[in-house]
Length: 293
Image (cartoon, rainbow, N blue to C red):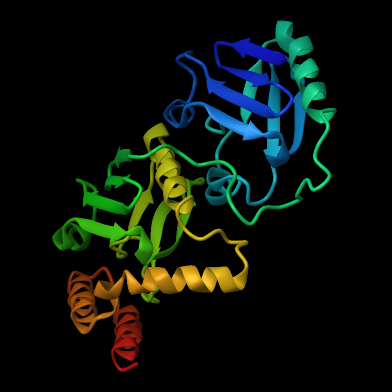
């Protein structure tokens, strides 16, 4: 058994599983606290390292592609403090950190140890997960996403009211945090809606414009949804069958009433100046093409 314990977290390796538990220190990021303990099987680990620094070192574990829904949706954009797969190491803990690294590196692996995965071996964040930010609140209960607009949401979004999306109607999730002066976003891609609306006009998208810990918490909502969608490396025939099942459950999005409702929403966005003439025309034509088959 190899273990490193600090106020920032505890990492324990028993030869098969690396167990990562967030610490109680006030500087532990909200993302790590909300995610809770993570059990990473050895087969999901691509590499582990200890990086010494001037004052503190850093322990990092790198996961294999496709093993973890959180890593999949974050795409490397979580900062060091929010990343659950990193740990600050005090100078007196360097020896323990190096011992843990060696224990993981030299543990025997199965002969069929995969390089990548076509299914998630980590479950993702526990549900329900709920986050409130300035533009609104968003939650996932394991079967649907709910968006309620807040005080900073554009009027066009607020007028549309609460959005409820069954996970079977989604093709994917896009997430990125604020970077410099560029807003981040959390966007839910609804199957069949090919309109590329800007974030301020998309009723299925929340803008992340402050870079706060609460805004970074939205990655947990994105990961909870991603964990329940078809894996990106799923064989094509299996993905097709799964998509067909999901499509059968999503008839409400494909009927004429749903398309007409979406057209009314686009008209509101155009009238309120959120969409210009060209954007409105393109979005309208895409929906009309769906109506005519």
